[in-house]
Image (tube, rainbow, N blue to C red; front, side):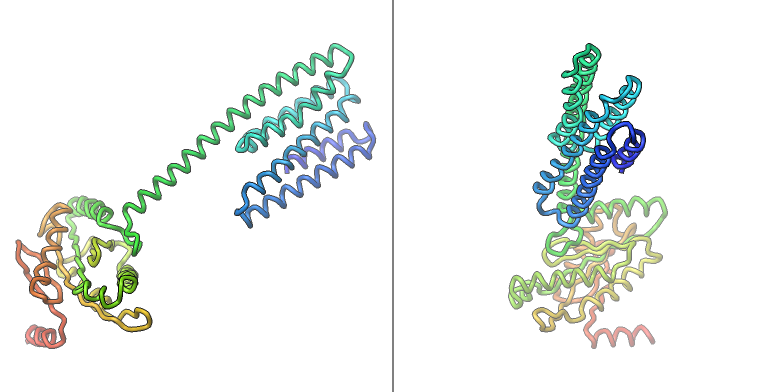
Length: 364
C-alpha cells in the first residue's frame, strides 16, 4: 500500500516534467507487481504446503519492485534540479530503510531489493561526466554498504528470534506432553501432584476442604484380555472422556496409571460432599461403554482422602486415597471407601441388595 501511494504521489508530482507515457508505463508496472504480490500472499495463506516455491516467486517479485524504483530514479534524476534530486534521493532512502525490517527475514530478498533500487542510481551517477555525479555515486554507494550491513544485522536478529521462538515452542510442547497422558490426553500424576500442592496452599489460607477421589477399575486385566489391547485402550479413552465431562471447571481429573484415575475436588463445603460426588460419578461411569458396537460394563474401587483431616501434603493425600481403594481391592468389594486415621471409616457397595438394605436402615 505504501509503495502504491508513494508511486501515485511521485507520478502526480512529475507529471509534465517527463514524458507521460513513461510515467504511466512505470505506474502500471508498479500496480501490476503489487497486485501479484497481494494475490501471492493470499494464495500462500490458503496453501502453506509449498513454502519454498512461494518464497522463490515472492523474492522475484520483491526484486522486480526494487528494479522499478531504481528505474524510476534513472528516469527522473536527469531532469531534476539539485534540490529536487536531493529530496528524491531522501525519499528513496526512507523507502529502503522502511522496507528493511519487513524483508529482512529472507536474506536474499532484502539484499536483492536494496541492490535493485540503488545499483541503477550508482551507475547513473558514475557515468556522469561532472564531479558532482561522482560524489553522489560515492554517497549512494556508502549508503548501499550501510543498508547492506543493516539488512544483515536485522536478518540475524530476526533469525535468532525465530529460532528461539521455535525452540521455546518445542520446549513448551515437550513440557505439556510430559504432564499429559498420551493415551487419554488427561493430565498425568506429575500434573495432578502440582495441582494438588497448589490447592492445599489455597485451602490452608482459606480454611477450605479438598478431597481426592481415587478410581481404580475393577478387574481391568481381565477386561483387557477380553477386549484385546486396542479394545482396552478404547475403553480407557471412553472412560476418560466421560469422567472429564462430569467434572466441574474447578475440579481436576488425571490418569495416574494404567487403570487408575484421580479426581481432585476443591472448595467443597463439607466432608460428606466427597462421598456424594463419588456416588454420582460412579453411577455415571458404570453406565455401559460400547466397544466395537457391543456394550461393556465396568466396576470401580473408589478411595477417598481429604484435606486437612487425612493429611496436609500432596504425597500423603495421594497415598491415603490409594490405601482406601486398596482396602476394597483386597476384599474384592466394589464400592467407595473413605480413609480416616489409617482405617476405612465408611464403605459403600452399590450392589442393589446391599444398597437397598442400607437405605432402609438409614430411613428408620
